[in-house]
Image (cartoon, rainbow over all chains, first blue to last red; front, side):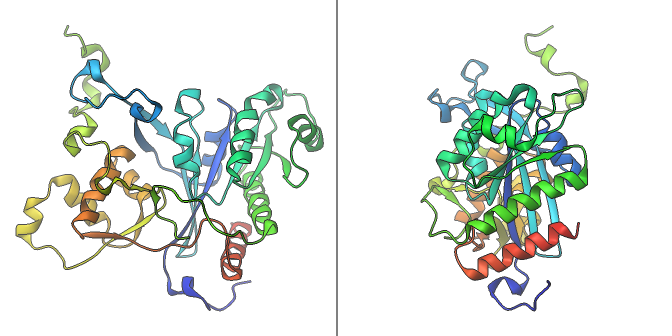
Length: 206
Length: 128
């Protein structure tokens, strides 16, 4: 396509997009992010006060209120200004509170599913449905896993008819690329949205 | 062996509690949390040596990383500090007008122009 620059973004401003990669523990999120992007470790430290512990004292070990978790973080640069960031959600339940942070201002989400443990991705599907974050389901085809077609999975997950479900191999760059293309097409097909919910997060306009 | 020694071996290097760098503060100044992909950039007059000397080494490093527009996530990865710490330190620099948060397109398309940009993303992905 490469149409001539004709709008506000054509001035070379950095234009980042965020895609969240979710799914159960061990489903292949790290593999998927690593397959398509330069992996850069991003450490994050989250205060447990956010989940209601309510302790501010960080000086003593007894009052330890933080925990460090490594986050999968990928980056795909397209040209000089368009950059796609992939963030994997922490797999453990105790890091649920980070999901709002990761999902705020996201273009969309990929829910990675494993047919052997399909129920592991229910919480992710619920989360993005409730937050009205556009998402697709990508079924990571593991060796030795029972093979289903995407339609079986769609029925099992009771997905909305317009939510794409695709098979993928999280190890293969070309396959992951197709997953991301499917997601962006899904967002495009939904057309423009009205506005964004207010949030204390600072960053995206709108 | 002291009580905590078993957690930290020689390879850990010097150990400083992450939030010691923020003076124990966990909430950013202004109580505004920077989005992971918010774009920040140095702004205002270039601080002179005297002004730079007032900043801590982490603030100075962050300021140098923001000389060209950059996302918060990239800054955090480059400085190798936890995201929560980086957010607090960046908020300090914002309060001091040393860096600014640049306006950005909405996360999801709101106008036909936004859709065009997203189509560019699609083309970019296909070209990978």
